[in-house]
Image 1: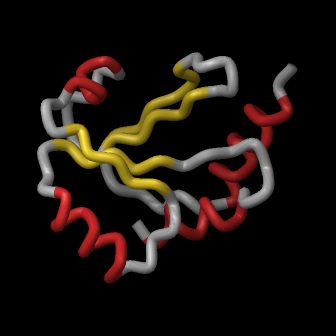
Image 2 (image 1 turned 90 degrees about the horizontal axis):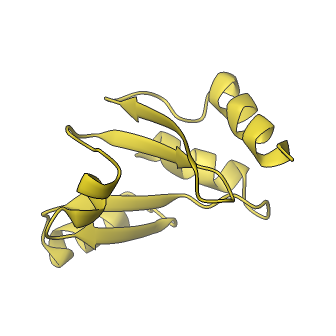
Length: 98
C-alpha cells in the first residue's frame, strides 16, 4: 500500500484517480488501516463482492486500470511496487491516449 500512496501522490493534479476497494472487510478495519498507513487515496468497501465480480477479480490483491472512457485497459494480480518508472510510464501513456 505505501507504493500505491506514492503513485497517488505522483499523479496528484493530473486526470488520474486511485481508488482502493476492500472486499468483505469491516468499515472500521479499513479506516484503521488507512489511518495507520497515512493513505490519502479513496478506499471503498465492496461488502457483497459485486464490484469485484463486475471486474472479474478472482484473487486479491488485484489492481485494475481503467481509462477515462471507463474501459478496462489492464489488470494485475498479486503484490508489487506500484511507483516504479515502468508503471508510471504506462499510466502516462494511458493518460495521453487520445
